[in-house]
Image 1 (cartoon, rainbow, N blue to C red):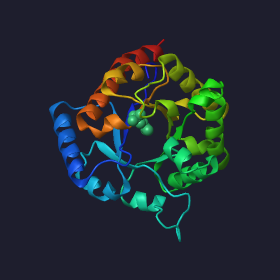
Image 2: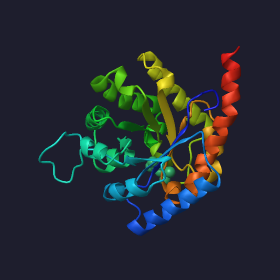
Image 3: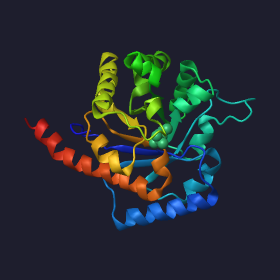
Image 4: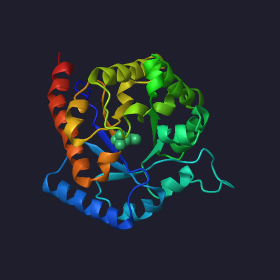
Length: 270
Ligand code: PGA
């Protein structure tokens, strides 16, 4: 993030956790933290399970946008259990995760499914957060860049360069999700660099896309991760379930953004 002038984006992915009571406690705590010490230079959002979208949209602090964890690859009709992009938009969701590795792996979502979800989300006026990442075996076989490029390419082929405009990509190495193992700073910078290189090759302006890192980000390591080149924020799983640690992570991003501002200004005036 150091050299970028983008406002960092911090998204919480609650996965299948929470209850009405937990959510109320989370919101109360987050509101209190934000009132005590505002966090100005960061965009915030949370992606709760579907059943809680309706109640959370009424109680979340205005600064925290609502997101969903998935969306149907179909528009409307006889698809039992599915939720359409239009429904999410109606509930005032701003973001929706597409292609999270837990869905790709456990529910056999293909690159094609993910691309269709991305296109419908975009069409409905949502911001799809395209999750990409390699498995441990793929990393061991030096296939990381190839895997990620393939995941990006599937969306590009269906949506074109404009699909990525004002877009969000989350790099989440599968082996780092929920394991407590974060990728090393050089690995994160290398993959984020490869993603920006791919964007450049496809005539997608770097400045119009946020590239987030996800995988065992917590309050203790977030400042170091957000200071890395090409990291425009984070997708936070486990640590986002606690409102205090989610806001602490937002504060790290806020600090990095404030440090980066004079740097970006100095670079522009050179
Ligand atoms: P984690 O999950 O922060 O618990 O590793 C990240 C994610 O799956 O989005």
